[in-house]
Amino acid sequence: MHSTRRYRRYDPAMTIGIGIAGAGTVGGSLVRRLVEERSVVTAKTGLDLEVRRVAVRDLSKSRPSIPSGLITDDVMSLVSDPEVALVVEVMGGLEPAGAVVLASLQAGKPVVTANKELIAARGPQLFAAAAEAGVPLLFEAAVGGGIPIIRPLTETLAGEQVDRVLGIVNGTTNYILTSMADDGVGYEEALAEAQHLGFAEPDPTADVSGADAAAKAAILAGLAFGTWVAPDRLHAEGITSITDADFKAAEQLGFVIRLLAVAERRPDGVSARVHPLMLPADHPLAAIRGATNAIYIEGSSVGELLFAGPGAGGEPTATAVLGDVIDAAREHLSGSQVAPAIRVEPGDVVDFGKVDTQWYIRLDVIDSPGVLSQIAAAFGEAGVSILSVRQEGRGDRATLLLVTHTAPEAAQQAAVATLRSLDVVESVASVIRVESEEA
Ligand code: NAP
Ligand code: HSE
Image (cartoon, rainbow, N blue to C red; front, side, top):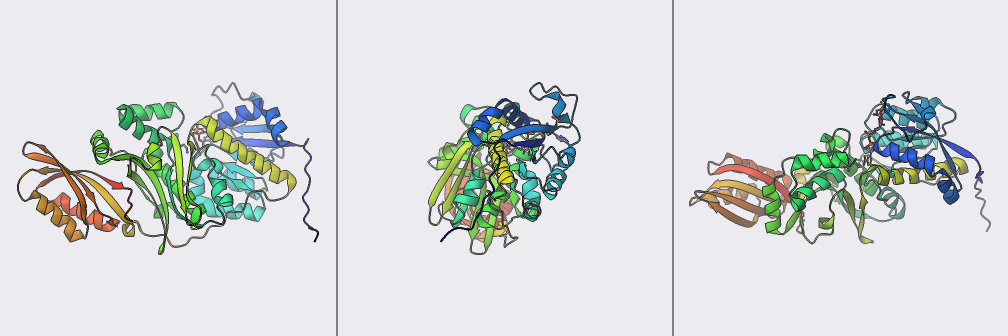
């Protein structure tokens, strides 16, 4: 039988005009590579990509690697300029980035973005706009920086039943946590270094509060399970309360601390969350240090997969953006679909309180008879069983390191609320969830 399918051949000599919104850490690297390596890209792909416009906020900044005639502060001109066939959004934030992306799609222009905040907040609307216009919306750089993870999830693993995704998806916080734990660097110093190296968001609150990782968790859950978890349904905690004492305790207990995005398929729906997690020191993700990101996927047929690499920084992220630009340009010229349309539904999202978790708790207590029994009773009343207790004495005071068995998150929280009300408990100094083999 003969196929009736026809592909339009594209003219390799045809130049594709690229408009880029943003010329900061990522955009700056991208423009430099598109300009300096134009002939290399053409030799490799047959595509001639020409930067036609670069939109920035501040025209007075010196940008020696960008030809001055290309720069504008009118970001919407990328949409209206007929010379721009394809729009790249690397400015970040919800607006005006959202307006540029939507208007570009509606104008029939393929869009590439690295903006996880925008995709997490407005993904379904933007996917629908792309499908309606019949143009691609690609965002490989939005999760994991230079690591290919969006394509594997949407293409290679399209037929797999993914059960769980566990990801170190924020380079800034992984850099801070591992600098503090392994090199004894202070929090402020490690954060400043992450900013200097170009890993952090313009406002690093998004990194350290867990918001950046939460946006990535929402995207991973949506692509892995087809269920879109709106940001307000996603529990997110950051790293700001972790102290040296927690790193020491983790080491004593055989754990390391990482900020993890967790997305799981459960019988009652999908759970997605972000919080610090104590990982067993021999867990594959325990070896991930610095700004490296890693995404660990468990699938019912494929087993376990680990994707790891540079999760932040201008050059690795620009590689992912450039790959998307090349795919979008191929699709634009050939008229045949290269990237699959993203299909997501609202679906059932499990309340965090119902999710089974295991906790490490560090308590400062009075060291006298009967104290442990009051603490044990608080857990017992909440229906939480204690796995281990370790005591470090200090005169008439003691520090207790407790690890619980798995129980619903709401029960763990109730137990800790009771602990805080006990006279014998001076403070609940820290609580960190533990990666459990029990759940
Ligand atoms: P950045 O260094 O702060 O650069 C932002 C760029 O956007 C700047 O050039 C800025 O102009 C421009 N811009 C901001 N608001 C604008 C506006 N209203 N109109 C025109 N231009 C505007 O940010 P970045 O680190 O490159 O991040 C860009 C995007 O990539 C974000 O969505 C981020 O989450 C994502 N991302 C970043 C990384 C990373 O490692 N940095 C990794 C993966 C994904 P001025 O130069 O004039 O200020
Ligand atoms: N600020 C982000 C990080 C950039 O530190 O991982 C990559 O998305």
